[in-house]
Image (cartoon, rainbow, N blue to C red; front, side, top):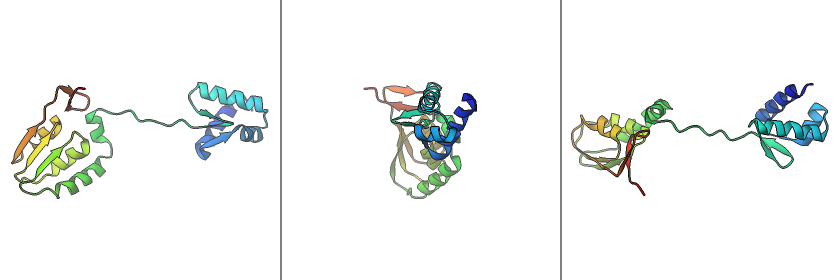
Amino acid sequence: MYQEERLISIIDYVKEHKRISVEQICSLFQVSRDTARRDLVKLKERGAIIRTRGGAILPTIHDEIKDYSGRLEIVSEEKNMIGKAAASLIREGDHIIFDASTTVQACAEHLPDISCTIITNSINQAEVLSSRRGRISIFSAESFRRSTDFYMALP
């Protein structure tokens, strides 16, 4: 087996079993410990694994934080259900603080046309609520962050 084929097989094994040891590489592919270590070094250099004492695991995948409009699309059905349930708890005369999250926007979209006071730092929530009865107060801080569409205080 060529090295590239072995590297692919090692990655496949780690994906299935979550980890692999040098000893497992040696027995699975009939190679020496030095060859197993060289394979792990190569995979680490490619960013395909994280070396551990005597083996390797897969790297943790961190999702990129998307801008506000991108986050509106993520698990939108679930956010819609949560927003609808939360909006059903709001009563006439309530005072509510809405943050700048996309799940809270779903709540704002389902808010019944009742008179209540809403405080928010979110341009999006203010826009959604602008057609509703009641008072909307926008908390304005020192800085507007365009990627997340909210005002924030500077340190």
